[in-house]
Image 1 (cartoon, rainbow, N blue to C red):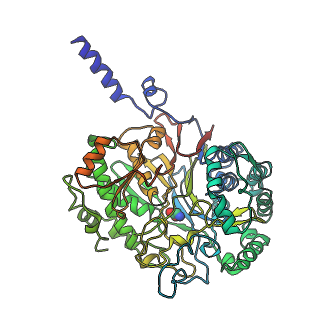
Image 2: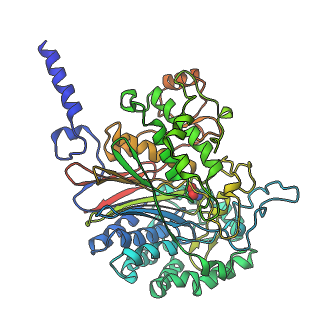
Image 3: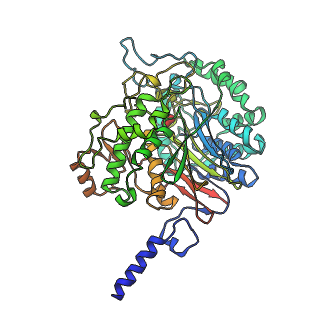
Length: 568
Ligand code: GLY
């Protein structure tokens, strides 16, 4: 009896233990990421997080740190960090004001609907993926300037100084990075027609200096955003592209503007979620899934249990079917957002769901209302000492984008044009099929899955998070939020936990390999699900920051990358 009481006592401690109070003894049963008192940056590279955190320590805020972190990632994480790409940022000020910034790339003025089709209207393989015609008009420099000039506190030259130093002095190549450079070596040579900075058999521990990028950043520090869009940098870029047969003009660059958007906000149980609006599908799709699963007792089902995986997969299947049909650039297409997010609509979407058996995707169509994005993107989350938070996802699309490296400027150019649907119904490089809403038009922004997200609870900041991962971005963000809210994990545990993904088509559940038991996989198969453990060695690389109950910050930096949290 005494033994039973002791067991009961320990079980009750385990359940009452508050993982968000980092100072309780019980919290020691949890795995925590970095804990800081005031401010934090979590990004794909230690160097970038360090520079972002340094800018905060100098008195800068999240928007100053955004410029520093994003530009530092362009130096030391060139597979996705960029000047030649674009992204999205969601913010929440300490007073609760929220907003979103769209600095997604645009189709050039000379782009046209069928530009990737042959005379028989078949998609020409790789034309939207490799080289000059795959490049969308870059938005990153406009984005970081728009945010910093509106809300930042420091001068651009102060912010860019450590970034320029990093480019000049160099950074150490990590093992994961060396693997990437070497994997892409032959394709760099093929697309660029010569060796580039990253070509020569790089090894972990090598130092890479990017002197040309340092010069470009120096000019930007001096002349501002116009340097990139109207100045010497613009001229070099346009000349470089047009010599190769590219279609981006000086007019395209001069016309580019980052756009402030209303974020998508919605409630899930007692948390409030703020996420990215179109032209990213992230916020709408996340909202649809969370609203479809809200009526169920996930906590009772358990983390990554049979029922949880079934429920999430079925909601994801239905949301992705809608996404690929209805979403596109809101400045070009009408998106029925209210309907897509209405309780009645979502209730009806789940009416044929049953725990007894999978609904085949062939029986799921967009509601009487598909897209493709790349795996290679990067995310960073920042909270400053003033209580402001940002969540930023930025990309070149594919790993190293179009593979085109402008040596004179020191950066890669995106292949974001592949995020348009080249032809309605034809799958893009990630197997997602698009529809008319996401067809190519001059100056239109291509649909994205990027889901920079901020979560509030009781009117206060709870979490800022996001991830790369193409179409798996949305479901990785979803699972991380649920891991914290439903399954009571710490930020680090929530980020580290195994992930799965369903995107309607192809009709299978992608699972991280060897992370789910064979017995569970057999149970799912018996219900009619196909499981694919080969497609994705990892699903997402989530970086997040959680505000703990005692008001501290806990960073979740994903082991799947070289991601690092730094703060004070
Ligand atoms: N290119 C990746 C995305 O926008 O989702």
